[in-house]
Amino acid sequence: MVPFLQEMKTRLGDNDDFIVQRVFLLDSPVILMGFKSMLDFVQTKSNLLEYIEQSFPEGKTIDEVIKQLSNSGTIGIEEAISAITAGNLLIYDEKTKQRAIVNPVSRLLTRSIESPTTENILHGGISSFNEDIDTNIGMMRKQFNSSHLETKLYSCGSMQKSRLAVLYIKDQIDMKLVKQVVSKIESNLDKELNHTQDVSKMMGFYSKELIPKFNTTELPQEAVNALRKGRIVLFLDRLPFALVLPSLLWDMFIHDNDKNLPPPITVALRMLRLLGVLVTLIMPGLYVALVSVNPEVLRIELALSIAQSREGVPYPAFIEIVLMLIVLEMTLEASVRLPASIGPTVTMVGGIILGQAVVTAQLVSNLLIIILAVTTIANSTVVGVQNSLAIRFFKYVIVVLASIFGVFGIVSAVVFVCAYLAGVNTFGISYLYIPRTEKVGGNHE
Image 1 (cartoon, rainbow, N blue to C red):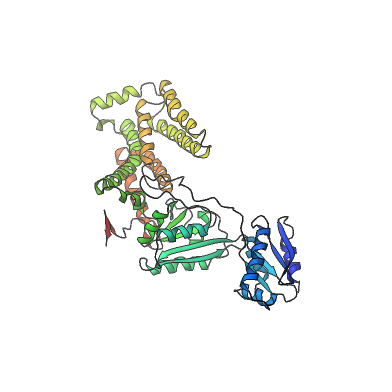
Image 2 (cartoon, one colour):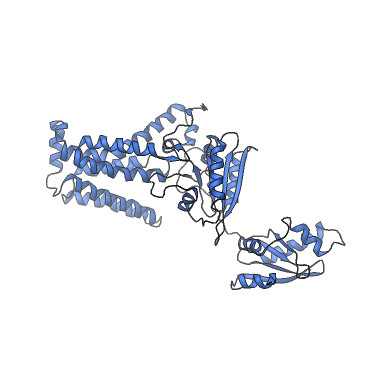
């Protein structure tokens, strides 16, 4: 059998930041092991010596000290390696073969709590989650100060260990949903988890689904609000947001911070978001239908105005709008990917200069530029980036059918989208399901 120390050096010794150092504790030699890139070795060793001197009376042997420090019993080679790669310190006594894992003085490897970057808050807390899963769970407990908040932690992955946290309120949630989620996780603990698609595969979700099964949020108050509604919140190592399960249609219209405003304004904002979704989906297709298929629906004055604006445009309305929508999508993607210092400049060039240029060159009509601007603004009114991306996809389906069947194609496409949404479910819960009727100022069943 390979000695423990030799096996540790074989498995981790090729790392230049791996430290194996012999020190004296209670006048007995022991070996400390860890990654100096993840812990402050000097300060950890000093604190450990001070702790042993203050906590253990004279006459204690190093064997008894290590046994007391190691609450988990015998530590195997795999457990030791997992602990070290997670940033812990391992104490090993060569004489007695005893091992203990202790929490070190860690290096600051995560950013502090900052403001959200993808969700803007008008009234409410501005703290957002970060990449450290323990910090995120702590923020949830601070936001929801109750013993009813349940937390389960799992270590997933065979090659790279990632922690996955499951949070729920035991008195608010259907325990059948919890059992289903926990069962999926526990049966797939060997899967690598690096992003939300890996979590979806772990849960057994269909990979070609257009609608996200998780509603993501950076805000602790939004995550806690989801828990109060009987949802499950997941946290994954190195992801600075919460995954709310299941995701429902109404999540794109309802924001918990709306309740910090007067009730009439809260209702008006939610109606405005609903109107924004309808405008995003229907307006591009309606332009194509009324211009190229059903112009007789328009009043004569409006039809003449549209015809005059399209005078000189060399291709049909369908090609015109698809080309401009693609250019607009590329502009939006570029504004997201580019550094913040030049992103607004690119947006201005794409949105103003390019738009004016194509109109002057008579490549598109003035009316189309107005429609594209209104559609883009309306698409941004919904809650959640992942929801706006799904809506942006569905509008192309409506445009295609509108170019073929006109107004009838728009109606057919809307029915198709509604039928598709009705068929989406998460663990048997429909995407269109309404768990409770929201009442401004409070909830009632």
